[in-house]
Structures are given as structure tokens and as C-alpha cells.
Length: 387
Ligand code: ATP
Ligand code: MG
Ligand code: MG
Image 1 (spheres, rainbow, N blue to C red):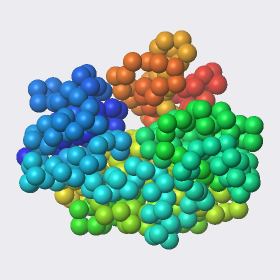
Image 2: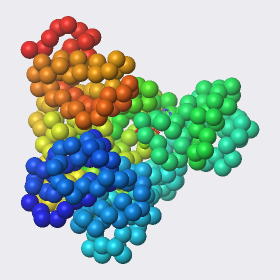
Image 3: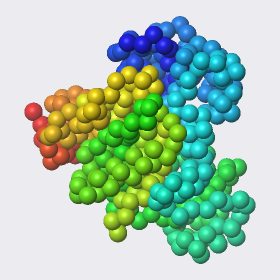
């Protein structure tokens, strides 16, 4: 399909699913991550690099082996990325290092979104992380508010919900040694997300708006399409498209949003890569978010129905498979999923640890009620097996 080699910084589950999409199109991928990482397990190339996407020498080694470099995680060494053209002058990097840099620091990302007219929760940097400084924030924002790490955050690791003044020392202790900002509480009714793919020549395609449900800060379920009025879906889509148009880049992006009780929509954050809220696209859409990314960075064709649901009656629920407290107990859910029609199980080849994302399940049906019936069986909340 294309003789160029794609280098991927990061070989976790997102990298693994990018490799799957690339494999189907005969596109060669080279991965930089730890040995036997999920993406490497499904690609027998001898050229993968064992190392880290935060290590400059390892990134340079990858740059020498590929024509196009991309990421499956934004927490990479961006300064090295910016210098790679001296090593490989023909190397293309998508998304652009500037975009990754803007997004990496969640406070700078917020400032960028505000500058571009997008609504976000009010926030402020915490230059000196002291009890007094946070008490002042509490007076301004009220409680709860969220203390957040500006960088290296994922799955809520890096967030602390400050529920009262008494909570402040614990928040500072939990997030010590990290660069912080404080964010006003967003009283959301639902959390929404939209996957957007942007082509090299700047065309933007959006996937259906979904609703995500988080448990302990980790995405637990994703309903596609979101069960909200059409006007809300339209507004969320436009906001997500405008968000992505504000970043000079190409590839797939995830836009997380808060749909507030008063009807307002705020952008929570942007991911410059495939996203958990886009896993449903593998089974529910004409083209998956992973193939969308591969097509975008290689400048392959995008027909006009790109991003659409597979049929006008397709509904989907994605359930994340998290490591259970008893080792491998989560496989029981997977077995029930395998016994359910139009339901697909994806395991990532990761060792099971309690709370760790080790896979996901996509449930498809012609109505959301039917998806929910299947979900109840899969999760063991109902013994009624959907045949
Ligand atoms: P991700 O894994 O999505 O990158 P993250 O670690 O960057 O997560 P956030 O997206 O900032 O964390 O927050 C995780 C979750 O915490 C959100 O999806 C939401 O449920 C809750 N949350 C975050 N910020 C706020 C807020 N200001 N008000 C209310 N809830 C919030
Ligand atoms: Mg994040
Ligand atoms: Mg998030």
C-alpha cells in the first residue's frame, strides 16, 4: 500500500492496535518500547528497538529506521523529536512536535484552547505548592476543586480531588515533586468524547460523539453514540472539530468533554493519538480510529463517509477489561463476552494487575437497550444470556 516505514513511539495497547491496522495494509512498522511490549508481540520484525520513548538516544535510533514517526503516548521526549531532522532530513513526524508539546503540559494546553476561543474549566498554575496557596484556591473556586499534575498524567494518576480544606496536605503529599495546576470543579451531567482525524491537507473527519463513564478516574464504559439530544451531539462535534483545527497537525485525536448540568460543554483535554473512547470504532464504524491514523499520516484516501457508524442503526458499548483483584479473574467477563453475539474481545498481552487496563470488549446491537442487555450478561449482572 505504501513502502514507507512507520516508527511508533510506544508499544502499549494503542501501539498494538495501530500495528494491527498497519499490518492489514502491508505497512511496515517499527516500535520503540520495552522488550515484548504489547505492540511488539504481534509484529515479528527484527528491527524493533528495545528502550524508552523518553530516552533521546533510543528515539534517535528509531528515527534512523523510519520514514514517518508517530506516537501512541504523548509523554515522550519532545526536544529530541524537534532535533530529529538533522539526523534524518526526510523524516516526517505526525502529530507535529509543536502539537505534542502544547498538549503534553495540560495547563499550557488549556491556555492554548482558551486563546482559540474554546471553553474549558477555569484553572490556574500553582507555582508554590503550599497549604496557603491551595487554601486561596479553595476560597476562589470553592470545594471540591481538582489539583492536577501538569505533565505525565494518565488514568487520573496525577489528579487529586480536594474535597475540603482538610484535604489539602494529603493532596500536596500525593502530588509532591510534580508541576501542578488547580482546576475548578466541572459539575458534569455526562462526559462526552469525540475522535477526530485530520488529514495532511487539513481536512477534518469526526466520529460519532460518545459518552464515557469513568470509575476511579479510569474510563470504564463508552456508549456510542452518546444518548444525548441531537443539538448536544452537533455542538460537541463542532467544538471537537474546532479544537483539532487549532493544532497544526495531522492524525487521529481524542477530545474529552464535560457536558454540564446547565447544558454548557467544556473541553476537558485533548489526546494527540488514538484514545480509549475510540475503541468502539473497530467494530462499530466503517473504519477504525487506528486505521484512520495510519491513513492520515501516510496520506492515503479518505472517502466522504469516513468516521460514520457502520450502519444507521449501529449502537455500541465498549467495556474496558481491568485486571481483577484475583489474578486473571477478569477473563470470566471475557468468556461471557465470547458467548454473546456481535461482541468482540480484545486482550492486550499485558500482565494482569488489579485495576490495570488489560483489554476491552466491544458490544454491538441495533439499539442501545439491546447493547445494555448484553452488557448486563457480560458483566455478570444478569444471568439472562442474549442469544
Ligand atoms: P486520561 O487517562 O484521560 O489522560 P488524565 O489523567 O489526564 O486522564 P483527566 O482527564 O484530567 O485525567 O481527569 C480524569 C477524570 O477525572 C475525568 O475524565 C473526569 O471524570 C474527572 N475530572 C477531571 N477534571 C475534573 C473537573 N475539573 N471536574 C470534575 N471532574 C473532573
Ligand atoms: Mg490525560
Ligand atoms: Mg482524561
